[in-house]
Image 1 (cartoon, rainbow, N blue to C red):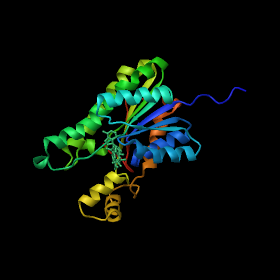
Image 2: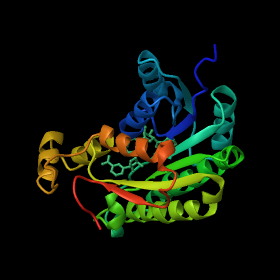
Image 3: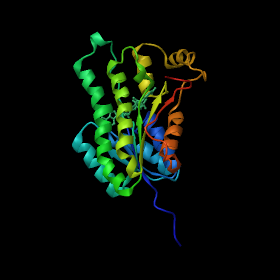
Image 4: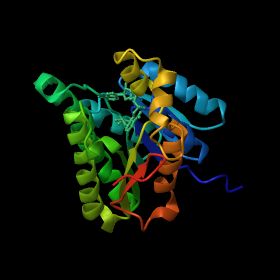
Length: 254
Ligand code: NAD
């Protein structure tokens, strides 16, 4: 009896809900052992249970990606309890939207800290595991907002920054069998976009219908649409694809 090979380990941040939860379920279905990382460990348990009920392997990990010590402890724990991380999906995110003249420095810093500092700290913590193994897949969540979006000076700057960060990782880490790519989603139905609709006092269904009018495939996106793209970038066969930004938005973006 040889048994089945040990599954590769994937870390997905911000995975207690929304896109991250969809990505975690998909990578688990692909056969990976999955670390479900989010601010509140208890909130991660729901996704872990869904994965386990479907026959997969998962671990709930509470961590704040913007906190250096929290990140290092989380990655250490994942390496011990699940195995060396081979795949990292930097998905954790927040929005603090406002027009520039009303945007506070705290709103600017909060968004930079989660998206940019968070992706940096997580990637720095996992890279030694990947370089040692001579294999790694890093997928970072950007956004169509990187191209500019009213009321999102902080978020647009962070998501454009994620693209530059991704391309640099591709250059520095390529020789170690590690690829780095970014996915830039358009409108995806999650609590993040539901909160935007609520803030504008528009029912979510009306908001989605209005947005869909400007999307060539005539619908808004689902977490599964992004999970499918992550699954491709994370796959063994995508080893010659690195430093790319894939817009997953139901139509072309610049
Ligand atoms: P969401 O708000 O539904 O989920 C984000 C998750 O990240 C939450 O569970 C939250 O607790 C977690 N998180 C926030 N700060 C964290 C921190 N410091 N440490 C750990 N976890 C933290 O959002 P979503 O819509 O699923 O978005 C996921 C990612 O995709 C984000 O990076 C977002 O910017 C990006 N994105 C979303 C859309 C969209 O339309 N929903 C479009 C483009 C890009």
